[in-house]
Image 1: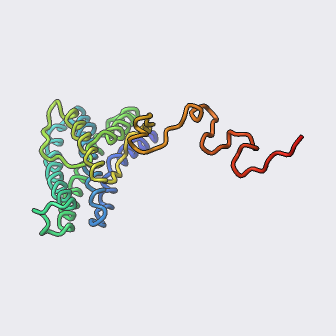
Image 2: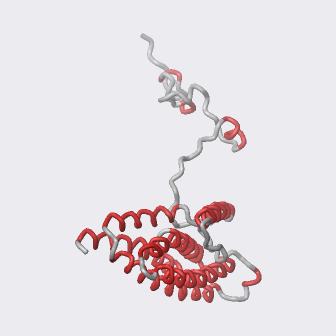
Image 3: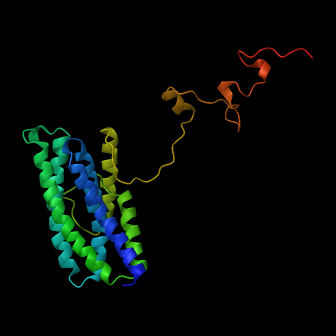
Length: 239
């Protein structure tokens, strides 16, 4: 591999390993970082399955066998993530066990997944050209934007897996909003919605008048009025 190939391989390796490192760092403080660890792991497992595992099945001689073994590790990790998520969200059935116990189970299974996935990525990048590696890196990064933020250990792998993952991600984001949960994973940029007249009324916000909506209009501040008409301004001297 030439220098360009090595650069792209490092970029793909970093894109695959970065969520692991972020999740492990969050687990260092399980009382406050468990939500972040669950989100990073859940999003990465879905993105890796849709991008890295698909590429490995097509390009590696024993790709299907390797991916099947990785999915077994992923399922065990998803189960541990599910228990940790339930514990930190107040499941009374798990209240008798310390959060640190579930966090350590996630840590050990995450490390096993990370080691197996790193070997897969290393073998996958050996025969890939620089454009193909860059494409995989971009696809993996974009897949994180649409991935679920909570574990779904019993989602089956099928031709509809991507559609199911999108539905899971939508449900997860609704739950994140309802739970007021801060999600650290990358999110799609959204254009803020400007409420209309009735929306402003329902939210008890002032709705700008037609004059205030004109470009350059200052409205309520009174700066669009002549100096003599502004409140607190001294009267203009007579001419």
